[in-house]
Image 1 (tube, helix red, strand yellow):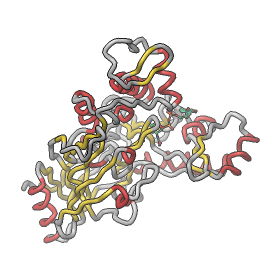
Image 2 (tube, rainbow, N blue to C red; image 1 turned 90 degrees about the vertical axis):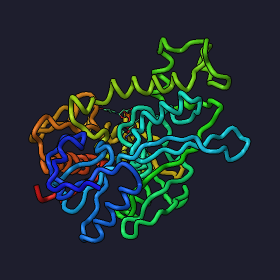
Image 3 (tube, rainbow, N blue to C red; image 1 turned 135 degrees about the vertical axis):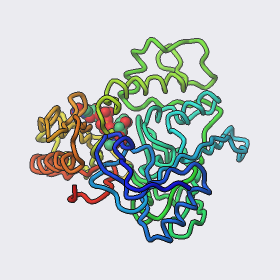
Length: 361
Ligand code: EPU
């Protein structure tokens, strides 16, 4: 086990925010992880788990032990039944997109809509990653985690995880208590693509990639052409590349705010005032609004804070223009939240996890 003191986390978060870990350990297998957790217990260090750093805001230096999980391994498990369902288990340190591509290459379908989401497998269930009409909870079977206080292995079923929109038990009642070590998902031998998300359907209907040939049996028809999971994956990648800035060029953490869900009555009231306001009905009767639309309407697109700004192409993304601190970025977010509440009466919530103390940089 290798534990270092005062390690810069600048290169380990995609917003490129400054900040140091008081102690830092990169673990390559579950034994090293258990040792690191035992060390933290023995020295009374708070444990912070870092995945790909693509969904975190470093608000300050991090006291205690920061553990980066770098475990690897992807395996196809025994089929549970005869329904053409395939179970795949990936280690927490696997890159999410590479895992998606691996399953597609192995003719296991069902994750194509979640292509190119940044980050690692272990972080995916924490915030129930989702895009283009699909969430990881839709494919979820179980996960394994180590309990931080005891080092014990615990299995979480789908219901244990209490998934919601960008939510799970790991952000609520079990926050800070577990480190995910592996995730098991149920995929299918049978392609069954879902292109109901309007932007995805639009991208596919205009794409030159739709070919009649080499389409697996069961692929969806769109007009006269058929669409394979691989084509859906490629279309998702193209949309994301067009809309979302590349963190290596413009440091960012994807969507900075959650899309708010309001009551149908409230939505109809707002629609009276803003006839263009989009809204997506939810199963619970509420209506989800695109926070990007609200922020865009309020004129924040491209607006600058100190060292950071709202992305010019997508109002939901904040970018670090170089040298910005976590506090400065959170100040820009706060200014947006206050303005959106004043204009629309809607309180936006920050989507990435804030690490460290908000006020202390
Ligand atoms: N819009 C604007 N202005 C903008 C951008 C978008 O008005 O600058 C409006 C448009 O009406 C558009 C709508 O917002 O139709 C929705 O935009 P988009 O399809 O880009 O989706 P989003 O709501 O901004 C969510 C997820 C993304 C996910 C996409 C696609 C959240 C917080 N974000 O974004 O997830 O990729 O849908 O499914 O739910 C992430 O979580 O980091 C992330 C990128």
